[in-house]
Image (tube, rainbow, N blue to C red; front, side, top):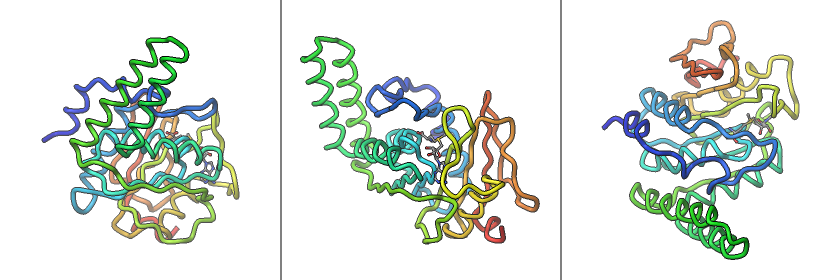
Length: 241
Ligand SMILES: C[S@@+](CC[C@H](N)C(=O)[O-])C[C@H]1O[C@@H](n2cnc3c(N)ncnc32)[C@H](O)[C@@H]1O
């Protein structure tokens, strides 16, 4: 079955940032259809038909949480890390929504808000949480996950992930932090090359016309949608950076 066409037809309003998934000022979301498209393109290049997904610049965790809820049946584990501890705290709460209990608790919270504030919008959001829980259950149930504070530039520990999808800082709402080198994209790719299995696929996306690749690194694919672009590369090709 083509997930691409299935998701293009689907109404994604339940996944809108701040609807059920948590948002916070300064933590941008990510276009749901583009997230889904990037995952599906990357799946063509990975080994097997289910992957362990990692976002090393996860912000609020919105991107990986959306992918977990949309593509539960393609994922076995989700990992979200960021250098910003406040971001990771929000991401951890969003990753809890990849479980039946997390979504049930979110539904209860939204129903309490509906009663306390007398606003129908909270009832609709509670119903979205219930719908997401039904979708998750139909696609395999709770999705194992973890989150943590990691500076991607200094990371050295091996990471068991088959696919990285990450939306990197583009200077409007978010910035590179931590041990920032002269060429952050190159350093991010080098980090992926030393921490991931060689067969892993890395998708880097940013609000730019073209994500630059270091000389000698081959793109598996490039994607351009509106003011965003993405590049897919193989971890093996990053090992020498
Ligand atoms: C564009 S935002 C990511 C938004 C995210 N995709 C989402 O859906 O919420 C970029 C993130 O990169 C993080 N970042 C900046 N420098 C970093 C570093 N050295 N290591 C890890 N993450 C970093 C920022 O804290 C920010 O959360």
